[in-house]
Figure 1: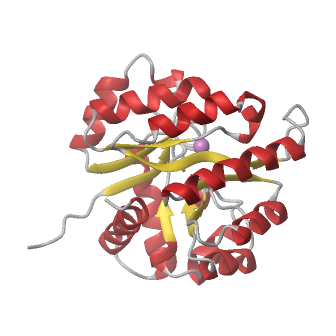
Figure 2 (figure 1 turned 135 degrees about the vertical axis):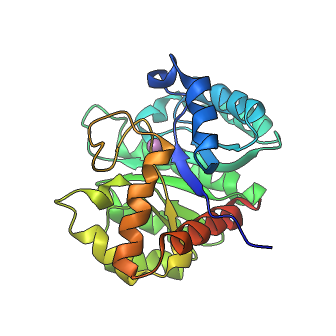
Length: 258
Ligand code: NI
């Protein structure tokens, strides 16, 4: 039997309020348009429950649970207990979106962010789940942590680092999330990363509602827009769009043990 090529969006936020007015219609439409899988991220305490609800309502949506570094001060023993309980739900397949964000001065202190990330890596390790990482201006610290937890599979979401760092991530058995940034005119490092890193280490992702690719840049992002990213990967690697779709969907299924 022929395998069907479809989009597996490895990182999206469909619980975001930007989807409140048309979420149901949109998700139904995406399914019709060949989006076969979505991993929805939690970002703060409230979004954890919204993510669980989405996974119950839609057969093609899976969930990641975690506290984003910008909200690290929301993390507590009680929240951890709740995360552990919700991870027992059938379709919760990853820890995310977690990580380090040193960009915004208003963010919680680095030490707290690191402690919260470490704690969530421990949860991932104890349950054998992958970790979906947000890394902004924190390449060195986050790579060090990923190496420390090399028995946990780390996904670098919307990858923005160098080819050298990408090679280190591959050595750890990790994955790179390739977002709409690849289609931006000023994107220089990322095409090189896509060229150099084997296809079996790449995932595609929207980060919807953010990061819409060209020609939708600045608009609300959605998973079917990923075709532009897929076409660019195919062009860079000199392979077909179908090959990219098949490989990235297989990678996502392998990562999430589907
Ligand atoms: Ni995100």
